[in-house]
Amino acid sequence: MAHASYRAFVEQLDREGELRRISEPVATELEITEIADREMKSPGGGKALLFEKPTVNGAVSPFPVAINTMGSWKRMAMSMGANSVDEVAAELGSLMKAKPPMSFGETIKLLGTAVDLRHAKPKRVKDGPCKEVIQKFDAPPPRTEPWPAAPDVSDLATFDPRPPSLLDLPILKCWPLDGGRFITLPCVVTQDPDTGERNVGMYRIQIYDDRTTGMHWQLQKVGARHGRRYYETGARMPVAIFLGGDPVFPFAATAPLPDGLDEFLLAGYLRKKSIELVKCETSDLEVPANADFVIEGYVDPTEPLRSEGPFGDHTGYYTLPEPYPAFHVTAITHRKDAIYPATIVGIPPMEDFYIGAASVKLFLPIFKMNFPEIVDIALPAEGVFHNAVFVSIRKTYPMQAYKIMHGLWGMGQMMFTKYLVVVDDDVDVHNTSDVLFRLCANTDPQRDSLFTRGPSDVLDHATSEIAMGTKLGIDATRKLAGEGFKRPWPPLIRMDAAVRRKIDGLFGKTV
Image (cartoon, rainbow, N blue to C red; front, side):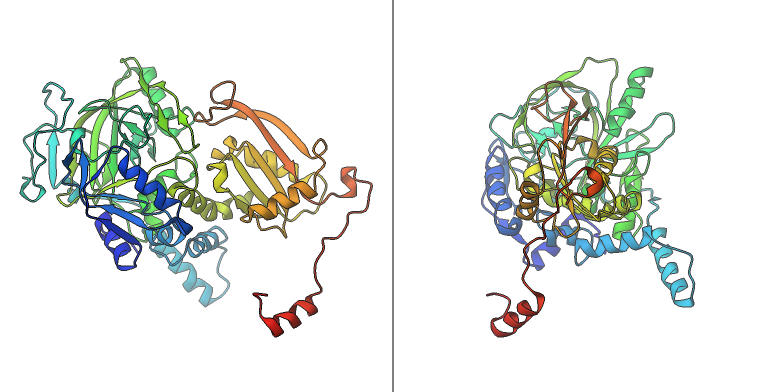
């Protein structure tokens, strides 16, 4: 089911008992983070939060702030319009395995899939709710404080005569040592100047002043690759940032898609309705017509880089200041009833765990196409995305675990994985205790460990050099004779199945 707007999604969360409304004024400086952090660390991810009166420097913002809206398995599924993430993964998996139909029933089923794929392609429209209020920049002097009085949103004209200002938005300062306020759930649209291919990524946005931000696209990201081409030519690079709209957009922006594959295609497929795109006011880039906020602007390759950070990151530590491009605002457009979407990152578990874990579930069929022996993959919360990855395989030949290690390290963002543990197919990789038991029981540290070097996450503070580091693969599978193991491998202790059934019948499975 497609969500017509971000507000429609928030209202659905409310109806389903998944939303907690906070009517008291709460500061966007640190206070929202403290409340959200406690909620995210509640059992099952807690509730989504809607701050109805967020304050910016003491003044109540006209825009409510929604946070933790995807911070549970149920809400993650709801954002995709599904009953469960596994249901969506199964649909995508069947698409990957589609074969020529052999019967009338299979033909009808394949036609149904074709209808779903028809919705993947976005379509262009002339206008949309994201342009209900339009503010353009004409070069007044920059401001360092918000406007004296926040506007009454109900009275805003279609064209607001004031210059655009980021300072009027309820942008969070998340943690005490952060370098300022950060937009934490932005979808950043860029375009390859050579091929015209579009990319939608998610890169944090630090607010410098009312019309300038940092653009934290990391070295290995597609947005950074697009930027390098503009830096080579010296041409001004158009960039658009949008927030809100269908909640599937942030997921698509963070999904590990192959370079060159449009994230709007994935979003359209997941929501089973084409994304309506509208052209920006000050550039030719296109953004979803149902977005809540659109921030248009550019990066000037002739300017020096600016210090960005510190920022309390998903690693659980602050990333320290580094030089990044500056983004200059040329226009801000938004809905009259816009809700500002945000998230926070920090010591896990956080909302981003569910977003990352959903990506693994959805793209597991693609991993299995390349490595059919893979049974399951898990990214434990403690690994803050890709620092630790657990993989279970059906092992049939010697050194197969090492094949999987090398293969996964070569796939997209899996190149950032520091610790990769391979276990047998009878291990539940989502049960960290089970994985650690096999790790400790089934390995000889020297024999079963593989160190290698490669790219690392720019945010990883532990590496000696930025973006370069060491990786450790551990083969925690049962060993075969062909791997030089000369002793008999002992059986795992298990109760007789008939005895288990008898006891279950007498006392139930809770005993």
